[in-house]
Image (tube, rainbow, N blue to C red; front, side):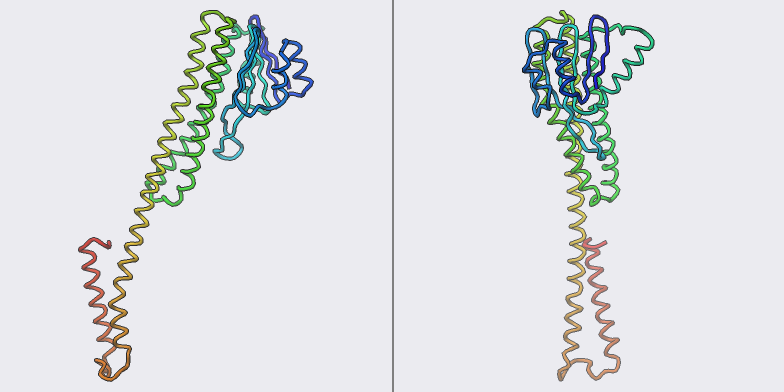
Length: 306
């Protein structure tokens, strides 16, 4: 699918899941080199920066929410930018670009040409992409806030897996944004060196870089919170398990003298105390209850139980 949006002295062409014929047609229209054309024909596994005197080429992978709840997946976008055109190539539906296309189509119904230039549109593109990453980050942060409540409401065991999953998603986000830093910087510097857009583009370059940096900082902050919560959860869970083990140990220790008394009076040998007494059972039970009561009071004063 090919989407075209004409603006002041230029055009944005967006190719979504393009066929080989569509790519070759666009390559001929904008005089794209054979090397870049070959890169557009299939997904590229790693970030890439290339170009010539007339255009700059960039491949980036943006993190986005997947089909499963909270899952993060990687979406590739190829950018080709010249003096009066922007080409974007993607191999699946990417929500922020789809949303931007709808906005531009709505604006076109009001005016024939939007009063923007190539450098302005490029900044808008990256702003929408990083806004989407920020929204996904905030979505995960919302889950993290609910996990925090569960941790301190006594559900430590139930939150172990969820906390680890959220921390993993933040790790994927942080890695994706870190991988973008160097190629995005080289791409923007190459556009400045070619002087496509004049001196004012330096300020736009700084804002695009700042967008990525701010989102990356937000992800790092939330990942640090997730890590702290996971460690807190582990500590609370370990403390709770220690309390359970202590209680079981005290109960086991309390049963030892009672078992010893029962064993002694159950030997049935000559000379066993109370063997001929008709009230022997009740005497022994009273003795055992008295010993158990004394031990419970002792453990309670030591704060080993209760």
